[in-house]
Every structure is written in C-alpha cells, then in structure tokens.
Image 1 (cartoon, rainbow, N blue to C red):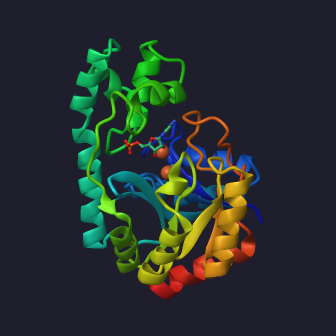
Image 2: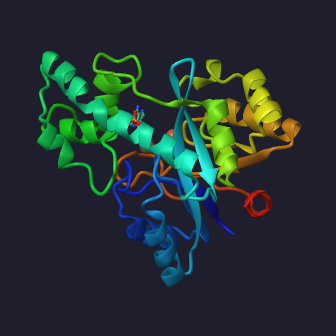
Length: 280
Ligand code: AMP
Ligand code: FE
Ligand code: FE
Ligand code: ZN
C-alpha cells in the first residue's frame, strides 16, 4: 500500500487538474492519494470520480491557511464536511484575503522594477477560486523576470521579502477546532520546514495536541531534513498522534515534490480513517 496524503491540483496552486493528478498518482504506483488544495474543497468531487475510474482511493482533504504570531502555518484537514458553515466562512475569508492582496503586491513588484499586470497573473490561475503568491510567481516566470517559482519567492514573494504583503489567516488552535467541528481530522503540515521550527517548537505542538486535540503531525516532507524528521517522529510517538508522510505535490509548480516521494504507513492511514468515521 502506497499512500500520499498531501497534494495540490490547479484548483489551488498545483498545475494538474484534479483528474490529471489522480492519473499521475496511479502512474506513480499510489493506492491512496489525498487531494489537499489550499482553502477549497472545489476539486474533490472530480478527484473522487477519477479515483473510481482508475482504481485509486481518493481522500477528501484540504490545507487550511492558518497563522501563529502573524506568520503562516498550514493545517491539513481530512474528511471535513464541506457544508460546515463556520469552516466554510473562514475558508472564504482566507481566499478573499489572498486575492485582495494581489493589487498591493503588484504595486510593490512594479516599484522593484519587475512589473506584471493583473491580467498576466489571472492567466496563470487555472480553476483556483483564489489568486495566491504562486500564481504571481508564475506570472513573473512567464514575463521572463525570474527562472522559476523558487527564484520568485526567494527574491520577492517569500514571507518578509520585498514584495510580501500579509493577509488574513485564522489562528492555528482555532483552525484545529473548526476542522473538528466540521467532523474532520487535523494534521499540522510541514511544521519544521523553511525555518518554521522556531515558530512551532515541540512545546507548542504539544500544546496543540493537549488543548485542541491536534490529530497528527506531518513528519516526512521534503522541507524537513533528516534531523527534523527524526525529531518530529519522536514527538508524534511521544504524544501518541499520527505521524504522516507525503509529497506536497504541486505538479510542475514545485520541484523535488514528486508524487509518492514520501508516504504514510498503512497503520497510520487506518487510524486516520477511523478518526474521520468517529468524528463524522
Ligand atoms: P499564499 O497562500 O498565497 O500566501 O501562498 C502560499 C503558497 O506559496 C504555499 O502554499 C506554497 O505552496 C507556496 N510557497 C511558499 N513558499 C514558497 C517557496 N519558497 N517556493 C515555492 N513555493 C512557495
Ligand atoms: Fe501550495
Ligand atoms: Fe503547505
Ligand atoms: Zn501543501
């Protein structure tokens, strides 16, 4: 059983349609794949339908943009009810905040000598209901200002970068509560990737488990080095929560994140499924 619990389609900032992603998962030898687009459930029905056709089990997921101390923190939700009103409202607010930030970011980019127009960005959006930084990055690539998304983030768009503009996001503990209220299972995404270890130290992750019932920690992720993985695995074991592994596939939008590059153990997936059933 090969299980990948974190992927993106062009319904957020990936480049495959949901159906293409499922076909790619099948070709990569995956038995189970979760579609976890940012702040939207829009691609799930299409992914599930494609899964039936190609014999891939598709888990209904979503990656909720949250924050701690004003910095971005991602939360994976599995099996959350798309009709749960409060969660849906929060997701709408995040999406509106993301799209609403486009104009000010473009103004900053123009001031930095790398102008792109709103139309150039919108041409990159696929079927995503919000316009995120990766789409702005894609427009910079298309205009020839940078070679790839990574360079766009490194030079301009990363948190604290010269063209970075903050946006609305809900506090991580509150996010976990909303996912649970919607019957979902909450797993913190790549907590120690990209310099996040100081923002989300073990003591704080412990607090999220003890006070909000955080269900799991994404351990095996490309943004985690061997030491981070070992530390997170030990922490998940100690806290008795799920330790997952996944690719965070974004199609051609992220290199080194091929489908199945990290996977989740079948026992862990069984427990996760059980928790969804219990919660719903
Ligand atoms: P946004 O939600 O619009 O602020 O964009 C955040 C998204 O940008 C994340 O979900 C990642 O997929 C992507 N991202 C963040 N940092 C980088 C980076 N350094 N290189 C490529 N993609 C990134
Ligand atoms: Fe992303
Ligand atoms: Fe993420
Ligand atoms: Zn992701």
